[in-house]
Length: 166
Image 1 (tube, rainbow, N blue to C red):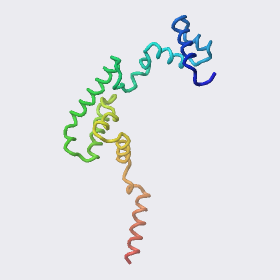
Image 2 (image 1 turned 180 degrees about the horizontal axis):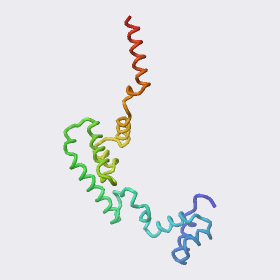
Image 3 (image 1 turned 45 degrees about the horizontal axis):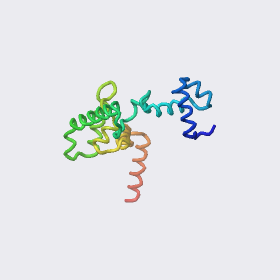
């Protein structure tokens, strides 16, 4: 079968599940479609699309009128608001590194899962998530001059500097 199915074919499969009461697995085998595709078509027809397993991992759609989506959006905004209230000193014009230090503080707070996600904190503070991780990676690396290679490099530079001055 082609990868793009006509709307009429999809409706026929959905009707076989909903009207005739056959299981999705039976209908999928009968019409030679994947069970997951048939499940999406049935969910769309029933209006339950996006409420199944894994939907709790997605961000709430701001335009949705679904009560569970709205409640999820309210929770997200409450957490973001709570975080922004806790970071009041930041509004007085901190340096970018200071903002990253605040994100790091809240990211490493507690032994379990942090209350605030790095994405949410970065968005609220006006920096990028990638920028935070680059900053954190740079801080975790030891000073380059401390390695044997760094020492050789410093000696090499000093030798050539002295050579040019002579």
